[in-house]
Length: 418
Image (cartoon, rainbow, N blue to C red; front, side, top):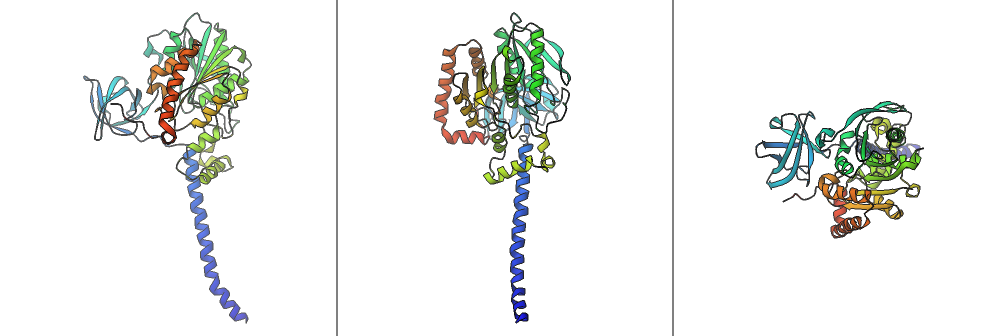
């Protein structure tokens, strides 16, 4: 009896072992997928380089390979020679086969004729020299030490705009906003802030700094503006810089001088933004990856370098100044549903101007006239002009439909200009 029973158990053991092995293999595979997704959330891969086919400096054209970036509508920076060269490219003039012909607006550094590939981004300008306006470079004192800044005096010197770039970026990102602000009579201050590579790193006491530490540096910039004669201040922020702006407007001891804020492609909810980076993966995998990043082993997967705090959520109830929100329905990084919900919760203070077809923080690049028109009208309290802008955009958004908006959040490229 015992021998027989032992024989049956012996026959069953391999089956149990196979089942256990299959479960273990599945767990390992699932864990690997979750870890891979976590790494993608922590450090999304940049778009692949765009090949340069040919350059005609005399005809002011450049021919690219037909990558999604090369087909983008609008004006952009193009970095080549491993980031040492910089050119500005304009509209798509022609697209046939694998060739995209664009305007070559100018070359700031490097030999574009020798370029073989490069990457697009939205900066456009490298220094305030591009505008031909008087400016000075100064160091603004913060609690972390002095940070480099650009100051462009304007108007009578009482109205100042402080421009706050996003994480993983620097002051050049914000230069696009200088001309309309200066033309409207505002002095402009573009400060560096902790952790951006130009300013001191910070005390490192918080695993997720944004926006909990950076806002203190922006407050220091406001204090500098007050020392120079400012009586009112507008804050303008891009992406996670918009989160910093919101925090500054809520927590600063000098918030009474802040009369308005402008949020371009704002990251308003850390969890939603990080989950969007895992697009294409099953929801349980994305949530598992987020939990992994927030765990003790998250640092091994890049969790210590996250550019947003997963627990950060902007509360519209805390808003007490008027706000202009500029958001693309095709953002691909900051979920548009979050931005719309934020605006709808405070119709008394928030004016949302939506765009269609622009990628994250590239609204100005897609349609600079619309972007600058919205900013200028908002600064002037021109509600009729803003009504026209928002009405036109709302109609376009409705025609685009939910499938188009979902495609945009997957970062699908807009159609080429013809």
